[in-house]
Length: 125
Image 1 (cartoon, rainbow, N blue to C red):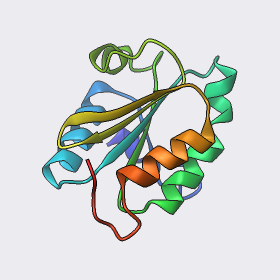
Image 2: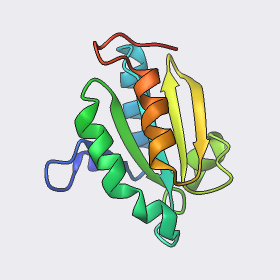
Image 3: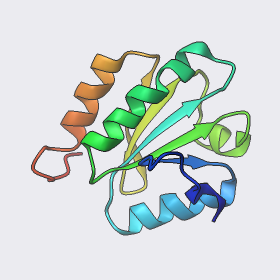
């Protein structure tokens, strides 16, 4: 699977095709694993600036699957998830979007993810 090629032991999986999206999404959904997705674009400075923060979040919340989707590389996924602006962060559980955050606001994103996944590992919808 191409998407498993991660950089520097990153916990963020870069989605590079509809097939890899479907595989990771379905596997996490079937296992009851929450998903946080960063929809970004390489030309969007705020999107690129959020990458190190997103990596840090992934290291903090180890029971969550973190996916990164470049909207230009995987347009079909961005369309399917109704992404209109970058960066957009989706918090997903059970195959559904639980929360959607648009913009590069690390403090708000961290609080929302923290509320989405309790520190004791219990998932909150």
